[in-house]
Image 1: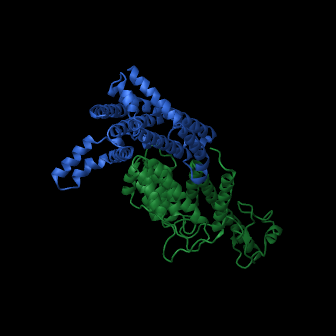
Image 2: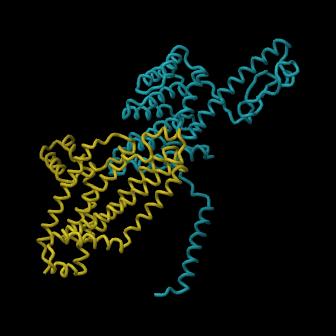
Image 3: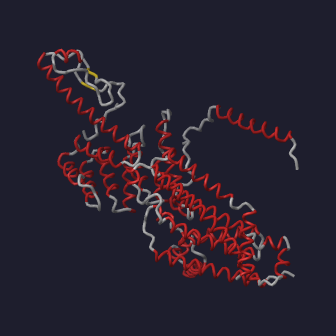
Length: 268
Length: 299
């Protein structure tokens, strides 16, 4: 456990050195300028648009971090040949890999926590400056705590993306890993279509294959409740609990696969 | 490594050159669009394709399309082009509501943009109704959407049978206000009248969650006030004519006869106009309330 924690902290420190946290400044500037400009560009619904923009930005910034740092986690050590030194120490390969994973997750958690704080600060400002009759027309207050449900599921989605990026980084180049991770993320959003594919094609075999893929490919659309929380639609805790269980199970599956692949890799 | 001062100078000169060239280019007249080609481009027209392409960013894309719709409507409305077109307005609103079916304001404002007669709007009340009906399919319990359909039938189409039906449907929905049922009954019994119109615009002004919609409703209410004022003064002018046997040549004649205390003004403070030939009271051409609703409007 201590080894995993050490590796995780060093990954986090490295991300700070690589100026990954600069994205927080971009996020803050984006939200603050948007809160001013949106009112000039649109007719009403400023708060709804700020909410959408904040959630989408948290998701996009997190995704960029997860993919582009995740794909280099193992590859960088191999490229710099520091992997030989690391593995010669009393450290199991799985500890190294899990440390890398949790280090990036820690970076993501801190990023998202700061982005969430900035997001709520901008929303609180919008709440204060909006006249009472406008506030009365909102389906929920600007600082609706239900937004945290969407942010929580975004975090879970990013943890899964990180695990997938790490898996690919254990056996392929960063470019290929980025392509494959992005491809899985995109396909994961089309999962519902795969399920319904059987209704549109005559071949039962093709329909069965599509259904099989539907069950195997990660269902990323399940983590997306942004639309619902912004419109104050109910997102039952049961749904969040089930999706969390699904996400954590899938992450475990991907990490175990990554450990197996990494264990079999020959670094001699 | 130290940067050569010439490099900094080159950077400044090149930046100034880029900005200068862009300013010159911006001052040039835009290239002419080939005849028959609309300058309003919409790359994706299929809501289904767009829904899939936006992955988990449908809400933010809906916002982008909504802003595009508002800009398209506002830009076209303000354009001096005699052939201006609102040709992508409905597709933009359709795409927005397909990406985010709960985006209430798009149905509400979009139907106003579509129903308003050309050139102030698209002049397509049919599309306004289609948009609101699309909203009702997603939110069958939103009385505002059903009332909006009734409003389009009432105000823009003067179809009181359908207007009353939709007001009744709205009244049956949860949290519907009390004034909807009597409005439906009056509309069905008497067709359109100024009192009902006033109720509709007053409620719109009270519940509007955007300044421009409130302004629009206030403008319509002022027009209704102006129509009331014209009717009132016309009766006095007719009385003068009956008493004197000739139409008044000016407001002064009316004042001398003791029928008016001063020059009558419309709600914007511009004097009403009296035609000495026909003795008809109208708005002054300089009044911002022109043109007053007439013809198909329920007045």
